[in-house]
Image (cartoon, rainbow, N blue to C red; front, side):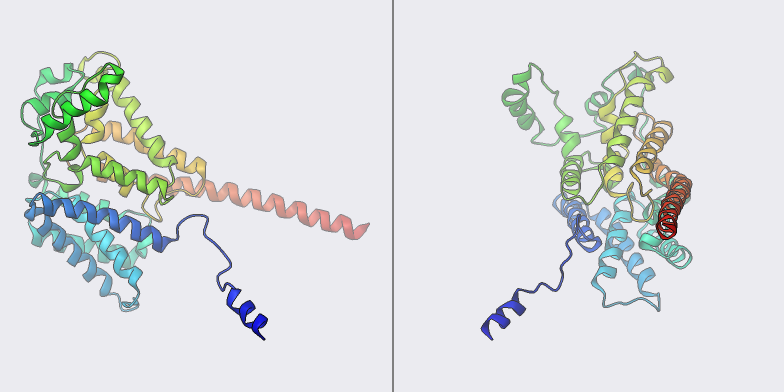
Length: 359
């Protein structure tokens, strides 16, 4: 009897294990990392941005819970709505009217959910299309950084923007920079100028997604390390965009070859944030590794032509929307080849069975 009881206790009712995190676990991880961005807004007392976040969150909840068929008690529904609301709010400038944010986000999410299905059923990124519409309606609220003509001849455009105050220095920048140069970079015989750590820590951009690049880099390591993200798309995208900025960009403004400022390109325009939090939105990417490679490649090429060397306030939203459309064609090709492969395998099996019966 005791042996029977111990046997029953040892039986595991869930015999299968995930090869990667479940969608629910992925949502928990993404939400935790987004909340770190929100926490930094509290630390830096960015109350205008927090108000925008509140408006986008309320809009996301309202659009979700107006669905009569939705199970409101499902925690995942709340988490998914929270992620959408936070991402939308982080993509909008602090001076955008909160009431306008609420109505634009609400109508976009409501229409998206009832026409395309929402979450993984939607082939288009709802946060990106909301940000794009906000830019179209209120372009004057999105910051525009103008560069002097001579700046394009420099290989360190980011440093020029730091020196002219476009990217302000944090109070601890000098101390940290000196420490890194003395303890780390001196080992390699190089040094970094003052201001780059400030650009990493907090660029003070009016759009929150553009600000905390160091936090976003740490988040990307967690997302890749926990298999929440497939590394193919971000790797191919960053490599493609970086190479084009480094090599091809100088030709457009009579600069020196291989002198494009990759640091500025990656640390402005919300490039890192959008790469790791938006580019692989559920339901919008191809399934196969080849498809993911093409998706990242197209996105990198588009980024070069839309973002240029960076400093674009809303360009990445349009990159995502265009790649979402391209993804449909890639997935169509994937399905075609998968169907052909499946049919060929089935025909071989049927033929083998017939030959066996005839024998």
